[in-house]
Picture 1 (spheres, rainbow over the protein chains, first blue to last red):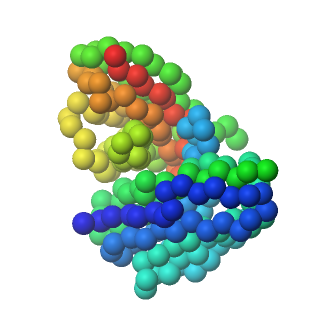
Picture 2: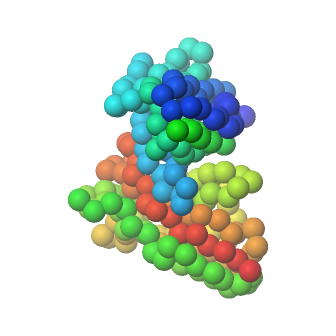
Length: 110
Length: 113
């Protein structure tokens, strides 16, 4: 079964801390997305990657294809980073639609 | 460049009614995907349209349908509404098919009473 697992489900951090959110998937993928959803519902696409590592500002996303695992790191976290972070994958051989993880709710305290 | 827009933003309907939601993609984007988000099931793929053709469909009953127009705008329709259809409905557009980065709209929050 094509599944996406995220951990942790909830995460509370102090401002300035280094944060890691993990995503594991069950079978081969063609692409993995990291999304950010703020209260109110709007979703922003942070990264799309199929190998290696990408960096944008304080955000870093890595993927290990062999281990079927991706991580999203936030350096020097800030209260404005508080949001739900969602991992989504496109499995190889699928119709092409995205399968989503349940999300990680991050709260950064000042 | 304007982002993805969805109308209406909020909607209240009663069981048995039908509803039509609209999505206008970013100018130049030809692919539109629809998603349903509920507290219990999270985000789930509904369908994807490209050049007025449905490319993919998720595991939803036939009450859920959609279409795309020649200007890439898309609508989705839900007939015979059920309480469980209460959700946030999101659309996302991309330049080509959804293998590219997707840009999400703000969503339409549907409440079925």
